[in-house]
Amino acid sequence: MIARRLQPIIVKDLKKKMVFIAGPRQCGKTTLAKSVAKETLWENTYYNWDIDEHRRKLLKNELNASSRLWLLDEIHKFRRWKNWLKGLFDEYHPKHAMLVTGSAMLDAYSRGGDSLQGRYYFHHLHPFTLAELLHPKTPPALEEMFAFQNPVPKSAEEVLKNLLILGGFPEPFSSGSEKEAARWRLSYGTQIIRQEIRSLEGVQDLDKMELLFDRLPAVIGSVLSINSLREDLEVAFETVRNWLKIFERMYAVFRIPPFGPPRIKAVKKEQKLYFWDWARAEFESQKLENLVASHLLRFVHWREDVEGEKWELRFFRDVVGHEVDFILLRKGKPWCAIEVKTQERPLDPNLKYLLERTQIPYAFQISLKGNSDWEPPKINGTAVRIMPAAKFLANLV
Image (cartoon, rainbow, N blue to C red; front, side, top):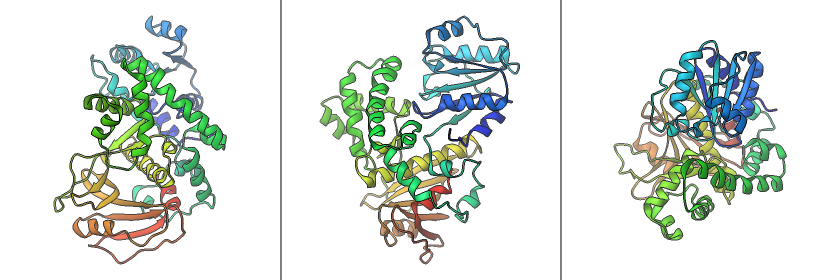
């Protein structure tokens, strides 16, 4: 089993509060929860809302009194789960620790009721990242991370290639087979829509929704046009918008908003869409951009969940078409710009354009192919580094 970087963090957090682990279906949440339980050496009991016997015990509050740790899986499917969990915590904590996992955004399914504020720590579990596969231990400090001085294993490029093709979900990645990964991917999409969404959202037209899900890989990395999707599917604008929100709540896709620096007329409302499973993209360039987006989102979530810092993932595009793939904001201010290339290229003019007009401490142009690692002359005081994608990603989280 591949170790997850979150495990030691969660073990510590469990001694203080409840812990929520949320993330896509089949990304390893239950495996991680059971591994955490094993490390604590606490007697534990696992309860899954989808199992009839478990559900009956949960509803009757017949939880194993001899267990130090209760593992509670998919309980967000219970309509009054927040009130129920609050009562459970207030009555039994700290005698009993509670680890809650779910394949939907747990805060999105509160469905009313009292708040759990102050009673839990929240962690996002992502598919495998390159850094996690190469260095399972806790990542370095922020400044050290972005100095990119740590040695990168020789296997980094090969592991990145496998991640790009197979995706980062444990089952397809561990299979090592493109055919098995494709079979898993086909089944996964159907399960999300026909099982998860149907049970939680009550959508009537699942066939059209499935068509939308199949249509979305084509728009990865592009500015998202809901109107264009609406016309393709012949459904209402609000219907498509609502379905996209559902896909986000189910951790199937995520969207990033634009970054608008004050001195540039940038787009303000457009968004870009990516999949949590980047291997759904058809073309290599889309897969790479989506993989990098996912790795950066993992970085943002880590800084928020573990370090308690406010970070955001954005993209830059102005009204005349200058575009930079990704901007990381730290406490609302631009902190890092990242341009992604499949092939090794000279400094991208759009990245240069942005840096000439905006103060950003760090800037990188990364490429899938090529081994060059160099710095062109500074732009507006910013040192730009052109480097291999494998080296960049291997130093994140």
